[in-house]
Image: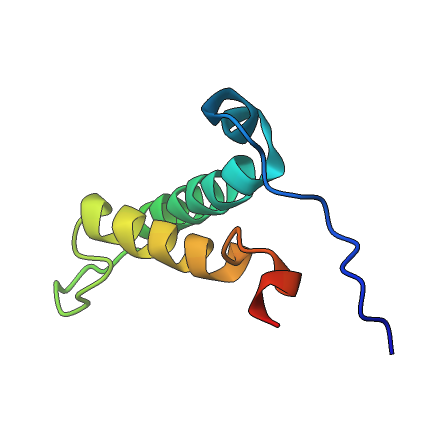
Length: 82
């Protein structure tokens, strides 16, 4: 078994953080999920008003963004949990 962690260290400064994948991975997940949520509202929607998620575009965008963040994972290092 390897005891050495081979992941990149966390960025040191705030500027490095904004330019790193630790910042952009969750942001990309949120944007993709929000866009998917809006597409769900626009193309499928809910004509009767009984659907809680699809009743308004804001609800679909927020739900999609949350799911996109959860699917994209958190920006934590896998070796930090040892």
